[in-house]
Length: 253
Length: 346
Image (cartoon, rainbow over all chains, first blue to last red; front, side, top):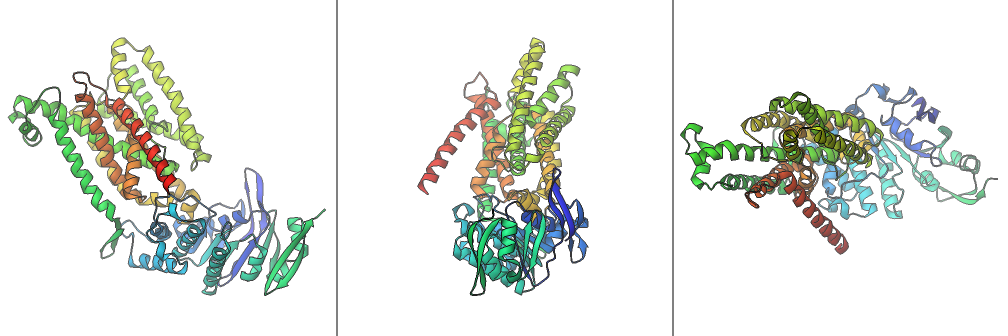
């Protein structure tokens, strides 16, 4: 996206933001609450129209694309959305195929294949006939992730995919996201955890007040300076086992 | 358990529950209709019922002719009205993402009622075909108002609040029209405004059948679009659905389903609410299946309510609207109780 600005009710959320995601790359967006991370994802997915600037997918202006065309290129895992408790896991994941289906072709062999594949990847095949209401938070999130994978898109946007999950499920989701990137997808994930971002992402963009404050490899971006400037917290950065750990020391006075 | 029908490029997933429940419900509905045709203030022979359905009117015995002239259109109207209110209620529940939505609760019924009353009050009685259109204008105008006011709250519970407030205002308008009418009009409009099938006749049934045949294809073609909406507007858009347009179309379709019912029977509450609940309990969440189950359920509820209202306290007739409300209130207490128990046990 190039020089994109956007706001709600005259309150600017995004100011001349420029962000690029490349195929085969896992890009993590970190930043304080309300800095516009989620909004950035929604702009890419065409859920909001930019007030100025252009969002492009494969060189095409998203604003000129219909909903269905966008959804064939971009899959978005939204932040927790309510799923009707009566729906079965299979039904939920099958919904990822919506854009590929037609009035009379609602469950083609290809749909079935994509659903089964997504279920295997997220290890939820055994839950197939369970009702969503019976699932734990972690199971539900894996199923929602499977739905997003079933959409079978080259661009994968994940909005806080690991929030509220225990360690094991966080690991599963991030592993899958990275595997998708290795397989050629452009993956953009909003993450809260610097360590996760440093361990899994190829590139990290730090957002602050609707702008990119820093962008690049984790080791260059997730520094004590940047964290202090953006989050207002003094930390001690510890590099270990290929990851960056930030130990908070106190608020910046 | 889901089966998938495949034929060339056609593939349709159908749940086993639907395959079993749909024919059973249809059979039950046909049996109920046959029963309803046979009972009433004048006793008739079972053979008359068949004759009334199958033979031309001229060849009928007086008993059979009474069935063909009075009971048959009433039963037809009950079935179609119940089914259409069910479809309307389910559509509104999906677009508002609120299991409490119903044409009554969102004010659509009252909007249609006010429109019909105003026109009747100003111009005297008009043909039922036109009444359906007047009712549609009222329902759509109210839907527009509710949507306009509740636009920002479209996917939340907010729309229910907006609907309820408009409902209350329109209810007051109905009372105002009632008290300013003449006594003869008052009695008639009073009964109608509580929901009744007492005046249903052949032309009413024909008018509803036309609407039914017009709206059903739209519903069947569009019901697939409702599926992603179950996850909310943003998630639906991310899945590739033009969610705003589908929401507006859904509300309009719901208004169109409710309008002819209100023109003929007056506002009958609870049916949309109840049948959608029951249908979801039977088949789960796939919209096409839910609505196709909800419709015979709604038809059955209204048919039984009207028939019991006719027969139970004979010669006094209790209007179907009141019967449905009583049954509706009771079933809701049941649902609430069993719901709590199953939650406690899990």
